[in-house]
Length: 49
Image (cartoon, rainbow, N blue to C red; front, side, top):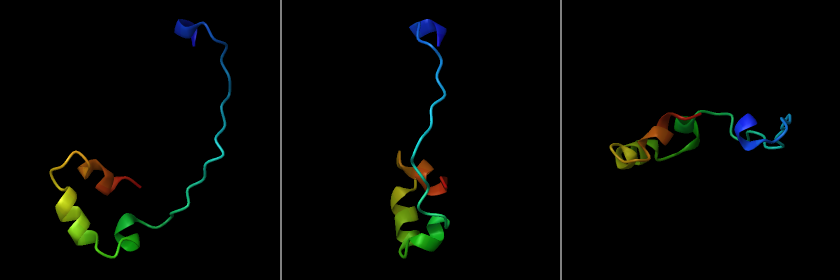
């Protein structure tokens, strides 16, 4: 990172994905959640997996 004048480093994360199913299979009231979030700033989270 030249602009910070720091040496480059290989970073590793210990985070693991714990939910492997799609959201529609995990959330019982999916349609209600979808209707509530539609048009809000959180709408993009409906499609993140």
